[in-house]
Image 1 (cartoon, one colour):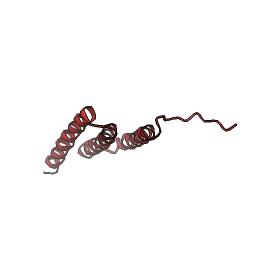
Image 2 (cartoon, one colour):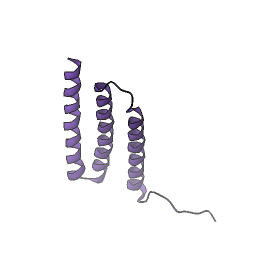
Image 3 (cartoon, one colour):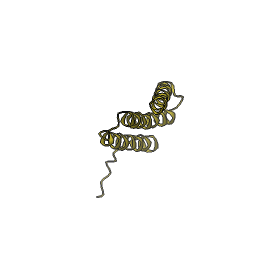
Image 4 (cartoon, rainbow, N blue to C red):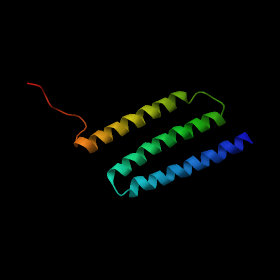
Length: 94
């Protein structure tokens, strides 16, 4: 029963990821695309966690942490680009 629930949840998250990919490609505006990209990162974390539970291993914990960090940094970079038009500011105090 538990394996069936995990399989169903994995299928639901995978379908959700495909719908987010559609939003990423078709999105009406750039902020919608950034939100879809962040949600895809969260869904990848969920898929990795579900697979880790199904396989009964903790080997994927580092992968989950790495995906979380990369998704966060990507979202912050895109948000800064949308706000200011540049990611790295080259202003020097003289």
